[in-house]
Image (cartoon, rainbow, N blue to C red; front, side):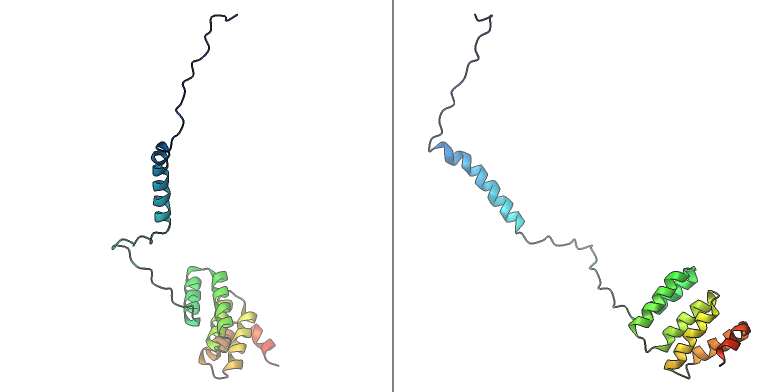
Length: 151
């Protein structure tokens, strides 16, 4: 019983011979060679219009204090405090960093903290002019804190 359907016709594919193998393998090997050549090729040169990247200068105490002053100017007291604290960590023997941190606390309305940093600066250099001036200004503007500072 065939129901009117004919079986499909199959076409025989000739067997591979030693002559057909190189014809099929040649494009494969060429693709492999091309892929390996591009994998190990030298990197492309940047265009002539591209500017070379300049190395960033090392972070210095001066640059930290400059950035802190810029942050104060922008009103970012928290960033200014962190940058000035970083300057103190970078060079703890520099009294100007302590004075800068005291100035930030004084501007933020925290005279007790400001006084402690001015005193720390004077502990390093007893004649630090910026610390002496800042303490005198602090005593003038916040006399209630002066009594606590005198033993």
